[in-house]
Length: 95
Image (cartoon, rainbow, N blue to C red):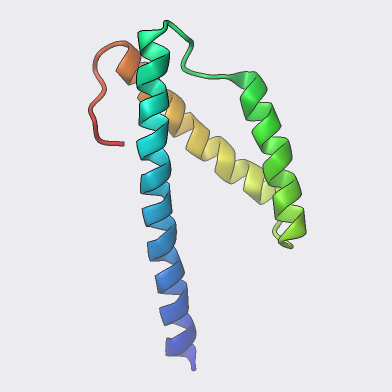
C-alpha cells in the first residue's frame, strides 16, 4: 500500500517537472519578446493579478493559498532572472 501511494506521488512529481519545463519554455518566449521590445523583465501588475488568481484557485482546491503564493513567487523569481539574462544577452535557450 505504501509503495503504491509513493509511486503515485512519484508520478505526480514527474508530471509537475514536465509542466514546469513547458511553462519555462513559454516564459522564455515572453523574455525574448520583452527584450526585443525593450520591456522590463518583471510585470508587477500581472504578478499581482496572478497571485490573486492562484490564491483563489488554491482555496477552491483546498490548498493553502499562502503556499500557492510562495510557489508562484519562487517561480517568478526564476523567470525574471531568465528575462534579465535574455535582455543582457547572457541567457541561453535552456529554461
